Amino acid sequence: MQLGKLTIDSPFWLAPMAGYTDAAFRSVCHDFGGGLFYNEVAVAQGLIRDSRPSWHLLETRDDEGPVAGHIYGGEPDVMATTAAMIEKTGRFVAIDINAGCPVRKIVAKGAGAALIRTPETIGEIIKAVCSAVSLPVLLKTRIGFEQDCSRITEIAQAAEEAGAAAIAIHGRYAARQHRGPVDWEQIRAIKARSTIPVLGNGGLFTAREAVDRLTENGLDGVLIARGAVGNPWIFEDAERLWRGEPVRERSLAELRSVIETHLSRLVELKVKEARCRRRSGFDPDRGTALHFRCHLIQYLSGLADWVDIRRSMNTLTSTTRIMQAVDTVISRQRPER
Ligand SMILES: Cc1cc2nc3c(=O)[nH]c(=O)nc-3n(C[C@H](O)[C@H](O)[C@H](O)COP(=O)(O)O)c2cc1C
Image 1 (spheres, protein in one colour):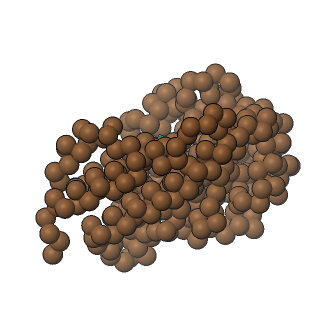
Image 2 (cartoon, rainbow, N blue to C red):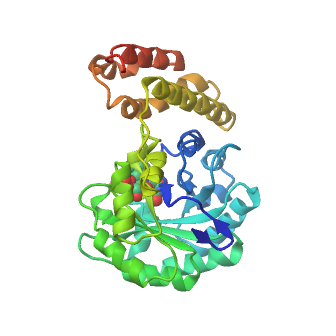
């Protein structure tokens, strides 16, 4: 896919997920392919105030894939200034505007999903950001805010006219958060009349679903979100299926190795996080273990006989303990043939 001067090799992108898509997880996904990756959403005002925790959300690794700087805010000038600061870091290939987050405190500030109600503001933000940066500007949004009140046609038109390089559409209404059916019909209709690349998102939990929704709707790409948690090889599987190749079997040894790699990269990130915390006493290894539990549950979800480990998750307070638990679970699986 071509986004201005930027070429993205794969139509399977990792969607932004606050609390998950940090540099460690993105890099693990990138080990298996994937097109574009987004950082966890950062607030524009926080970056302008030079808040260290906000800037930490924009931490990247040298060995990861192309990353879009994903930001939220409701004021065009603030978003433009922030986008220019992000471009200056030289670490991002695009700027992405969040116009879909339904979290109450973000909506209350007139940002995230609140923008769905005023497509003209989305247009103003994109226009302002496009004038402030030379990077391609993307929009991630939803089909509407209130159930059955679609605004996506006006939003897509506003984004296109304002100079967006691509639009990613989550096919659920903001009021439904991340639940319920995904309206691929509406996404397909936008693609049919759009002159810029259109990507679809929502409910893609297997590589097969990702490939089918991409091809049957004639889309330029799809964003995989929860389907990648504990399953970073979904990108490799999807790319193989898309090329008509069979997917690769994975061994327990590979699962262990991916978990270990993910953990060690998360420790590196937490060491950096420790430096931007005001209060001392933050232990990067413990911080990693606590943060990693939500990933661990998903990594182990397909395995048998680990209910006891799941119940005692709160005792996994170090990366050593996490790996011991992983080894215990792996040792209980039937020998691989
Ligand atoms: C824990 C979590 C955090 C999320 N954070 C963001 C975010 O920061 N920005 C955003 O645009 N979407 C965010 N999303 C929405 C996802 O990018 C995606 O649109 C949504 O999960 C639907 O895809 P799925 O059904 O495949 O999970 C988040 C979703 C989850 C589950």
